[in-house]
Image (cartoon, rainbow over all chains, first blue to last red; front, side):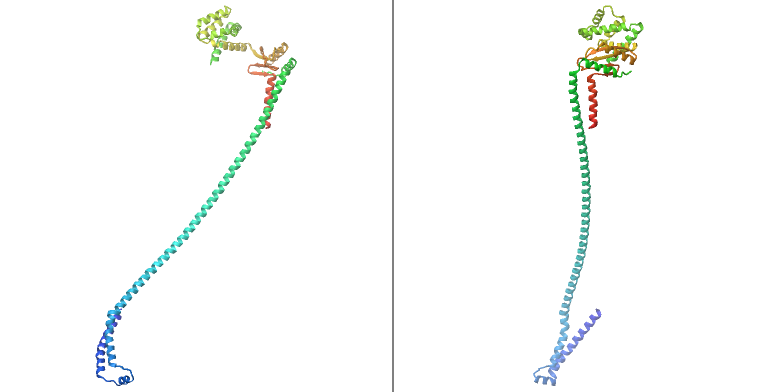
Length: 206
Length: 183
């Protein structure tokens, strides 16, 4: 950079010095020296003044470093600064974009992971709910079976009890009727038979 | 509680009567008093009354026996009246009779029939009881008009039920058990 700067500075000075030389030299040639082919060209319609041209080149050689120093360099610096700003902005934007991309990737990964976990959790809960439903259904069926069995047993017991009660009542009514019938028909003779039967069959405890 | 008191008096009186050989005399005295109380309810009320003077009760008892009662009987009744046990006299008499029966190896039998039990059946029944138990039999024949027919004999803790109603009761139980078993 320093070598390039020194080289540029040297060429600038060389240009200036050359300009200073060419400017008067051109003026001198334009005013003092008669060049043949200029006349030929002038006659041919081309008014070329070689001295003025050289003098103008000298002026340009002197003005160019000035222009470069005051305008081109500043403009170049401004352009470079602007370019650097743009590059930095682009870099930051790129970094930001990369970061956003990374964040998005992370977010999508987490989202996918969360969705997977949620799905797994939902599936797990569904399985638990199904197991619980099956268990409850099984218990309900067992209880219903027990109730049904017990109800059948109760009905059977009550049916037997009702039959027994009816039989007992029939027996009771029959005996009551028979007792009244016998009571109306027991006379002395039958009573004596009862006494005979008792005395014959009775077992007297000692 | 009161029956224990009656038993104690009965045992004491029986022991004293046994020593002097007056078991039956004392029992006859007590029986006559109980019969009199049954025949004359006012006598029972008079003796049981707590407001009647005890000396007055004793005077009435002495007059009732008229000097015919055994001295042991009078002493026992005096003691019970003075101790306020007049209400236990009837029960004490029953327990005394029990002791006398046990002493004499006598079996008390209560025979219940619809009407008067004919003599031949009485003889057959008492002979059977005597032969089986080996004891003298002291029967009490009771007539129960509510009976349909047959006879019921009760002694000690046994009841020999030969009545029509008893047969029906047994038949009723048998049929009821069979009805329960078959249902």
